[in-house]
Length: 314
Image (cartoon, rainbow, N blue to C red; front, side, top):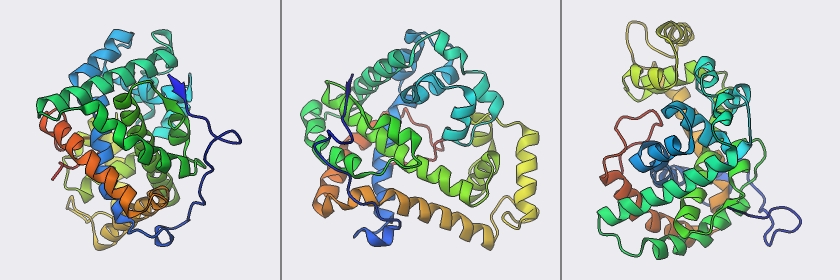
């Protein structure tokens, strides 16, 4: 594993980061389109058989211990409280079942090496399955543009992005996956911040998402560790606040506007790092990721709907 250098010795300096997507020379919704591709490539780490097996092979017990440990590994040997706060959305008891015990089975460094190696293998497997040749060369052609985006992103109040952005591997496909992961976490950090600013608790945020997307509540409730009582309490709070309609699983007009605001603000906060590479750079990333994301989607590893809120690749 190779660390990317930041700060005084970095070859690049971070570009000023606009506070609003209106100042970055691109439509904020474009960042959501890029996220869709980036998230699909990143998601092999959760859903591909080779990645799931890698977490077992490194020593983690069960899917969720492997999930929490491998995703938290860039932060070091963190405990459940930090992960509950930074990940957002998970029931405390669910996190506590995995951490800190996971670190008795494998170190963060071992988890990082394992997840990168497995993710690269999964991306190569998906590419080969659809006849996408020269996966390594294809990935290598995207690294400079992705690196420029990461270098220009402000890490302030983005702990998962900040801890991921320095990770590099001597493998173009692993580096591509890691860069997608860094940018995925950049957007996710911003989304959690927006939810907190708007006053949503961890469970309430998922109740809102389920109602907004007409998703079976059990998909989010069970995959985030909330009990039926927890969910009912959060649902009741949102109904009392006029966000969810009485006697209906759907959002009120107020709830719809609030959800749209949260998503739009998330787009705005995610957009500035992409501005500096211009439309040509964004097109290079978009056009380069489309075949990889499509290849991953065609494996049928990722279920729809899914707990990470990823829509199908069009």
